[in-house]
Length: 425
View (cartoon, rainbow, N blue to C red):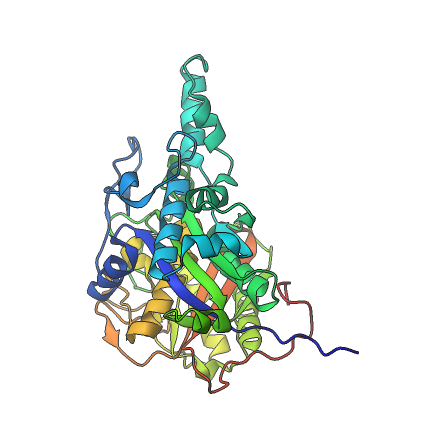
């Protein structure tokens, strides 16, 4: 009987970020360190009639600056964000496109809204009296699957699996977990994983109807928090095996130690405390670590009353009432939907590489029901070895990814799984 092939260690070697506080690694890192607040009135569509219309909008995205091949008339705004972030990740990782094209590769992009802005334009055309003047490219842009296809098109990838994951606001972490499994099982050599979404009327209207849009700023874990602010953008990570990274002399930001997924399906929009605690335990088990090994938590941290309390309680369950610093980057860039946990993963990798905890800004007083140290208002320098990145989503979709400093100590080495990898364990 032949011996089983050992799983490969998976590392992050490139990062791409399209955000309202900066484009690319350098700008995004500077924004995180400075605690930059992107909140401002939404201008890209008519917000007449909305009680609150603040958001974290990207107002200076110039496609020609970031994209080389993507036809603008056939791909929408979110697809452009995804393609731009992926190109940034490849360039940041020092990856030659010819080498990527010759390899077995995966593109996994998570999203909540897909290209809903284009769908809204189609609806407006219909209301206005028909499609006589319809640009055929507009209709082609609508399917959510175009987001991952846009990455492949922009980079010229032909022998590639392109997957768009639609598990709402946890989709970015789902994509990273999918890439982790694909590489450590030897199915692909490289994976571009992340998420993308563009601000749209549907999102603002939906969260307004739920009564969870803040009037001015997002204040996660604050006693006076009002809710979330809708945002937009994309985060993409270039993943490969540790052996591959060493072979090509690539810089390594972090190792992807493990992840956990589950779905409680108890309520359409309200998170379940025990189910999310179980998801964190699954991720820690998959990574082969204990709660005490985690130095920093990147919280889902939406700033809504229900989410923050539920998440904080679940964290305290798992960490026995003594969790590590727990930060919320949504306080800066808003809730970027399917891009949220992907951009948080980028922030986690930067926290490990640069040795700091990003701040939770706009903070005045911690809600006693949210018993966490949210690193209020100013970044803190610290030795970050392992970060836990949380994501919760409508429909009870939960996803947690664990990133760690790459070393040869054996810490965080994953045990042989009792069940098939990639499933809901």
